[in-house]
Image 1: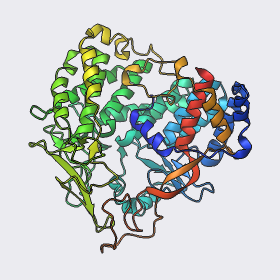
Image 2: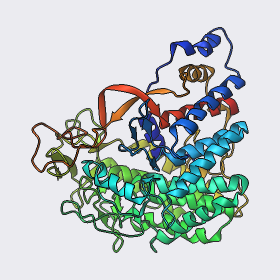
Image 3: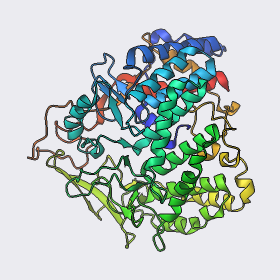
Image 4: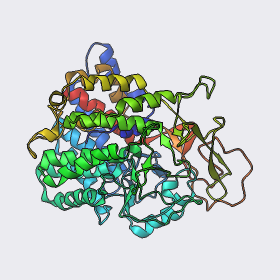
Length: 547
């Protein structure tokens, strides 16, 4: 699928201002003299950058998020072993999608070969059930378990990495994006070598769906991580980070590209779970996750309480409107007005958390009162998160405040309500014969919604400017990478944290004491090699040469 808003946010978060090498200013000088960068020059820049990533940064075809220039340390969402590859975007699957995009734009087989290697790396770490974990270790399961027992175990705020389940996850789009890459790489040349992995991926999404239509965060279902008295949450139906919607998109892609009729009922059940889990008045919203038995909001990580979530509710409303455009069924619009009104009523007074977004992240069930997240202690072994109703001194790594665009929701709803069902859904990939519509040609060049899966070509209006193309050419260094400020760094693993609190104030920091392996923002960021920067910059150059 095209990059989702979550993936694009992560790309932007890992991509910061680059340093231009003084010796590489020829493209800018040429532009100043009135000459736009030539296509051949842009192609040369793209090839040089890709050669570095594919032949220097990659490990057996796989990637993490960032690297120190000497490759002495490398990072995904947390620090990685040298033999590890990352699945979460912008990781190995995102790189595979970018390579396929570059292949479509240039016809250069080098990019197709790079995409194949990325897909093959993912196949090596594909769970036997068909999905993917957040990351994998090409040295084998014992090395990955060692990572969980050391670096992962000590990431205070990254609770999803503190326990080794040994299964796969739908969280953070990793499985969905990898599934999509398997579909694309197979369709590209119908290479039968990729068909078994694709078949397993499709079956994984079908097998893991609950009868009511939602998906758990992790599958095959396992428990065992009851964190500080909180139950294991990974079996709950998960709306957080677009789990349901991402699976809907993948299944629609399978339908439109392969005509596999098995996916049609799961698509319908998945869209309908939004209606089934939509809570009644007077609190017509959703939580991050919902229990399977009664579809009520449930808690997740210890800083994600059992509550309604404003951002998830707003996102689910957007999904319901997408589904009206896919199906033309007005049932997906029926309860949207009451939910928009409810969200609008949650706006915080101006004297509460001035300077913060104006809607609380979490809303208490039964009272509509905001819930705020705090922490105390200094590491995962002596620290804890707690919830109260005081907005001061909330944690900084997971905001207790959200921006909700009420006006945008109202306008889109009004426009769709005024649009006849057959008109709204006329371009739906669900309304065409299965297997008769190609997938989008480019996946990384812009964000497309589920209703835009039929968009094949770029628009002229998407074209990167001459000045931007020239800047990107100038900033690629002599080695072939774009020096990018590595804002996120972490403490190296030095052993488990103490049960005794380290002196200091860690309630509003991203990292605790020196044993905490969670990423934090560096005081003085240093340049490094960024997978996200490479993807963003290459996508911009693809837009330049194709639009």
